[in-house]
Structures are given as structure tokens and as C-alpha cells.
Length: 399
Ligand code: ATP
Ligand code: MG
Image 1 (tube, rainbow, N blue to C red):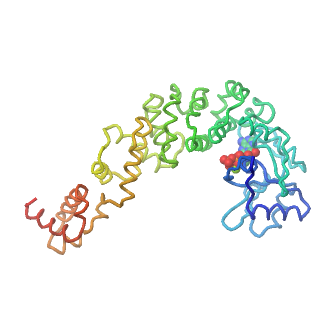
Image 2: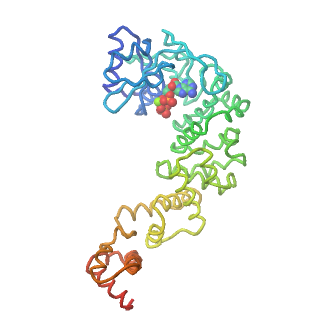
Image 3: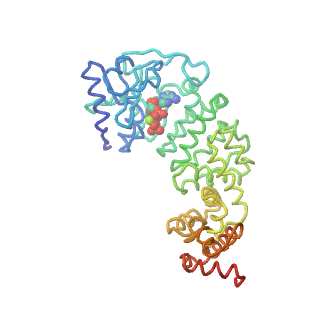
């Protein structure tokens, strides 16, 4: 497999740490992604240096989690997490270790990580430390726990979601031992915060394989949010054809869940998962719009856009595309791309122009709305002279 290489700001941090006499490695997801020739989402460094030894070596350091050994070394606007090799203490709440102990040993640090493919390190020269067979699992395209799956999920229930997240993102299969462990331990997911569950679900929704959400439901990991029967994978798969934007994918997901009877209220479901209010509003309104037949012509879409904010219209389009396999998002995007007029703001004249020809008070708004309705059907009339002439005709009752 061809490897991608780390950017200079990462190699600079590694060499500064090494020059100061410490061991330092890139670890976790960035090593996995480099070996897959994918661009890493972020870079994590593990080092034998304690956080107070790391801090003076760099110009700008943010103490993001000193107690857990983590600082963020800033390189311009980008930050790199630098964490001291550590051994996690006991997990009492299935979420966070009660305590952590620092260690000088990289291999000890790799043992606390979730999956074999996430438990590799790479040094400045490109040499890889891989005590759990991560490279072999990358070749086999397999998500497998470091050590015993049950123990790992007992320590941190979020790992059950992470297994599906990585499988969905990478298109890998999941070790049967992971399924067996989840069957036993799924109820522990109830202890996780909604925000952490939401973030994992969102990453799955944004992947190419959202149909992997089906086992997440059917194994009971989402019982606290959606106790009804799991949605069918064939519908979940449709979500992958929506644009890779979180709001659209949530709208498509909720539409699939509603259409399958898995949820009865999009807004209640999204609120429970602590989605931001903008997404909740757009998805809820979009779902409502999509209950009526959606437009089949550009004029129809422009009318809908003139009556609703465009996020709502996009969510309605996403809902229908996910359930009915329509191409509505494409239709709405094309209208936006061509800069067509569907709001008063895009009309070639405004209230002041109408006042200039003698209109007053509520008459101004009424005529502007009539002009907009006209321009939605006749885009070529959206110019000042034509609209002023039309305004005169409206006022005098000719049209
Ligand atoms: P992404 O590409 O989405 O950032 P990642 O593998 O880098 O994926 P992060 O959440 O950024 O995942 O975490 C970085 C590394 O820290 C992981 O690769 C893994 O080694 C370790 N890690 C993170 N969360 C956990 C966890 N809950 N349990 C065990 N190890 C974890
Ligand atoms: Mg990462």
C-alpha cells in the first residue's frame, strides 16, 4: 500500500520533541489513514514527554486536557494534539477512565486504544509500531478490538458505536467477536451522552455506507432514542446519494425512519439527540413540506422557495430523495446555481422604486408580492423598466 506523508508542521513537532530527548510518534487515526493513502482528518502525536515538558518547547500551546496528558500545539490556525503515553485507569461509568497514569512506554499506550487499526504508531523515519496486527487488519479490511471486545466495550461503551463508524467510513467488515460483545453489552450505551452518540451517528450518515446504521438499531444501541423496529438497509443506503452535508443527511435519515415507522416525530428524535436548533427546525419543516406532493417544475420549486427558507426546502427535497429516490435536490440546486429570482430581495426593483411612482403603505408590499409571483413564472421580466410598467398595470387593475 502507498503511504501519504505528514505535513511539515507535524514533522516539526516530532523533531522538536526528539531533539529535546523524548520519544514521539504519530498515532491512531492518522497512521491508519496514511497507510490507506487517505488524507487524515487530524493528526495526533504521542510522546514520552509529560505535558509540562511539552509546553515550553513550542510557541503556542493550549492546555486542553492536562490531567489526561493532552495539550494542543498550535501551528497557525491548525492544532495538533500531543498526548503523553498513558495507561487508562479503571472505567467505572462506561465512559471515561477514573484516572490515567503516564508511562514511558509506547506499547503500553497503544494497548489502551480501541481497534487494532487505530493502535499503530509511526515515527519520524516512517517506521511503524504495530503490536496488535493493525496492518494485517487493514489488509483484511477488518475492524477488530485491541484485546477482548467485551472488556473494551465495558470500559467505554462509545466504542460500540465507533466500530460501526469506522466500518461505515472505511467500508470494512466487523469482527464477529464485536457483534457478540455488543449483543451482551448494548444496554450500556444508555449511559452515553446524547452528544457523543449524535456525533457518531452523524459520521455514519456522512459516510458512503449509512446502511450500517441498521445493525446499530437492531442490536439495541439506539433503544433510548428509537425503540421501534430498525429501518431496512435498502432505504438507509439511499442516504449515501444525498450531498455530503450533515443537515441534508439528517433530513434523509429522519424521512427514512418516519417512512418505516421507526420514529413518529422528527423533531422529538432530533431534540433527544441534541441536534442544533437550526437543523431540528429545517428537518422538521422539511418533513412537513414533503408530506404534500413536491413540485415537478422549476416554477413550482421557486414558489416553494419564495414561501419557505431554503434550508427547509432542501430538507424536503432530501427527505423525498431518500425515500422515493427522486432527484429533487438536484432540481433545487440548479435553480440556486442559475441565480433565479424567488425572493423579494432578488427582484430588480424595491419598495423605494414603487414609492417613486406614487404607491404608499401596504400597497407597496402587495404589489411587490404580485411582481414576485409574476417573475417566478417569467424570469426574463425581472428588469426595472418592465417591472415598473407591470406595477402600473397592477395598480390600475389592468392585470
Ligand atoms: P478520525 O479520522 O475520525 O479522527 P480517529 O481514529 O483519529 O478517527 P479520534 O477520535 O480522532 O479517532 O481518536 C484518535 C485516536 O485515539 C484513535 O485512533 C484511537 O487510537 C484513540 N481513541 C479515540 N477514542 C477512543 C476510545 N473511545 N477508546 C479507545 N481509543 C480511542
Ligand atoms: Mg482523529
